[in-house]
Length: 254
Ligand SMILES: C[S@@+](CC[C@H](N)C(=O)[O-])C[C@H]1O[C@@H](n2cnc3c(N)ncnc32)[C@H](O)[C@@H]1O
View 1: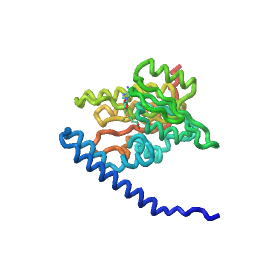
View 2: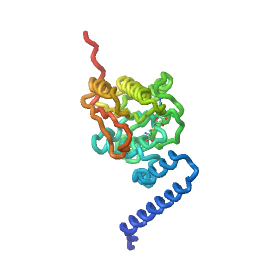
View 3: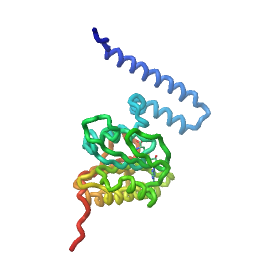
View 4: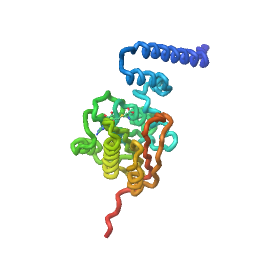
């Protein structure tokens, strides 16, 4: 029997037209925002002009942030099938989607080792196949960390991710201090729970405290790199510190 012929260029052309229509539609919506605040209009227009927003929608990612982790993983190979991953500040869940896929926590690849993903956020968010979700929990509290430890049940973590960001107050110094504190909380937990050779990714907003944080991380990991993925907006101070090769617990001097 003849197989149906799929005309790829036709499909791509239809996709292109759909995208164009979406953009046109959203531009009309932006025009309809008359009377709304300027920041709402600016936000919508920026979303429209952003190719990652449309790409995330087409690939069923919950938000455009997925491409930041995909790019870092493609380049630095921080996730592999069978890994145990902790995703801090995970809502709405696009990093968790990527991690569940790349570690095979979702069990899609039968013959590959199956990983596990634990995701936590202050907000409640929808389940991601293969991930254990801790919604409505503050990662920095002893209760949340106790729950994570119990759930890990003695398994060591191969990769700790943090895309956590505090609610910005607009006071630069305060905001920078808050995000740096979040990074140290994540680092502390990672040092206690990680397997040797584990990786760590933390989001930072570029500020004067970053070099010290970088040095502190480097005491425990073989390499640390400051990374700005293409999907991270050029006008934002956002960067990631990507650390590879956890050296393991420091031996207590005799
Ligand atoms: C940029 S979003 C994360 C997006 C996510 N990586 C994704 O791809 O869907 C930052 C998240 O950090 C969370 N967050 C901030 N402080 C937190 C804390 N102390 N504990 C848990 N989550 C926190 C926020 O609620 C927010 O959902």
